[in-house]
Amino acid sequence: MKFLITGGLGFIGTKIIEKLSNEGHSITVVDNKDTYGIISSEGLADLIKWRTRNWDQNNVQIINGDLLDRDVCLKAFRLRPEVVIHLATYPRAKVVDNDPIVGIPKVIDTTTNLLWHSSKFGAKKFVYVSSSMVYGDFIDGTREDSDTKPQNIYGEAKLTGERLTKLFAKRDGLNYVIVRPSGVYGPGDLPDRVVSKFFEKAMKNEIIELHNGENKVDFTYRQDAAYGIIKAAQSDVANTSFNITAGNATSLRTLAETIIDITGSKSEVQDVGMHKLYPMRGTLDISRAKDLLEYEPKFTLRQGLQSYYDWIRQYTGKI
Image: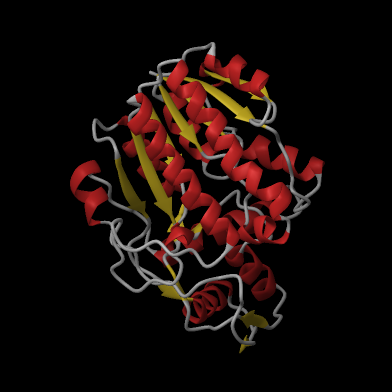
């Protein structure tokens, strides 16, 4: 099968391509290699080298460019992909919220460009990787048909991408799947995400500050998220949405305490109050993905955190 994967050099995309390329699929990657100011260009290059180390490079073609550029899209779609997996976005909600003039087009306009080309070039399926942020504040057991009330600009932009996907599907007959991951973490992640920052603090025996330690996140190990997206892409099921998460939310306090235990840290945990950007969250119901995709997350939180910690110890200072 021929895949087009946007943001394919990113944290989740590289794991998806690792599996698909070794299964013999033909993959086109479009990625702009933007660091978003999070790490240096050299650091990103080293990280990409590690992330892609197990790819079957014979099955992968990389196009370096911006999806806002229609010529870049044309170049990718002239290769006639059958399935499009759209991962490309800003890696953090706060980046979009802090600079929406730049951030919103990166989320919405790139999606529109891809949907138009997918329809015109006859793609069989469009997989839109959205976010649990579309729900806004939500409680344990939230299903895909629950209310969507985003509490930040990033969530609203992602929800707009979902609506555009459905509109193109209705107008042009494009089959789609919407995937909503949550709190993805693991080896190869960027250093400014919550799990990464907690590990950094713990390994330095520094205070771990929490913005409402009782707030929960359905943290999902990188491999589980990637394999869930693959199942959504390869399944005959279409024109629906899936929560692809661990299905078991954990409070930020428990996350910090688990990391302290794994690292043997002397760090203390300190609650500094609510964060206006992030909604109150809980466990997402993954029964639809289990029933229709046979999706089953493999990693408990502790197993995933231990794996990530092992990676950090091995590669700190090398990437």
